[in-house]
Length: 303
Image (cartoon, rainbow, N blue to C red):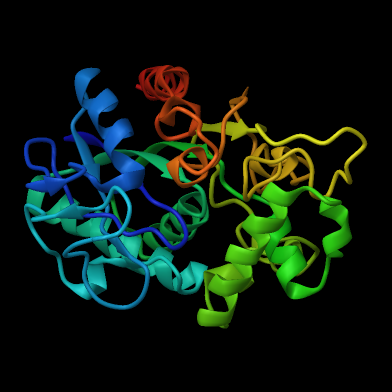
């Protein structure tokens, strides 16, 4: 069986859902994945969402904004991504989840659709599966707002980028304040690993991933809603958390990634950025019908 698995990003709380079972309360597949899941199911794909929790434990509920209750099944911690943990450990748990689907549901091939840091988690999981010689075939990877080369907010939090690069923009400064709170609460996790310093450079995480995506068609989707004339290119334009250049994997060596296609939309990172700024959810990367069309097309092209 060939299926689609939607993977959430950093600090996400997302339930496990199947092609036929979703949550009984709140959003059917949580705040990040529900729009994508519905669109991909409507396109005729068998769609699963991978469980994630912002911390160790299981994905049993999310009582925050547009969360979920009553998931159809709560999988154990070892199959649940700790979305504020390290990238490589998240990849290990995601790989275990994919192997679980192969064992229980007969999944032999998978198209991975990843939001934000979910793209990094997927790349780590692909490496784990390949190193283990697992027969599951990853037939495509589609990333939405993934920080391929880091997040400007993480670079500011680490001191690698001056906060003055965002100028006096109050919206971006508010975003950075929230990110700094996340870093302070998870000092050794994903928020500190999504820096340009950690991901890039001769000995960076990306370099260690060389060859992992060989033979896997990669489609990249980026957003650039927030713009500033003459703004520092290390921070502008961005989708709220990720710059356009990072989301488009600019500057990465071909042995790390060779995208089949790159798409850009005037979108924000997620509905958590759309809501406070009075934007329709359709301006968020995981709720935009135009993005749905790109994702659907990329999966069909890989078949």
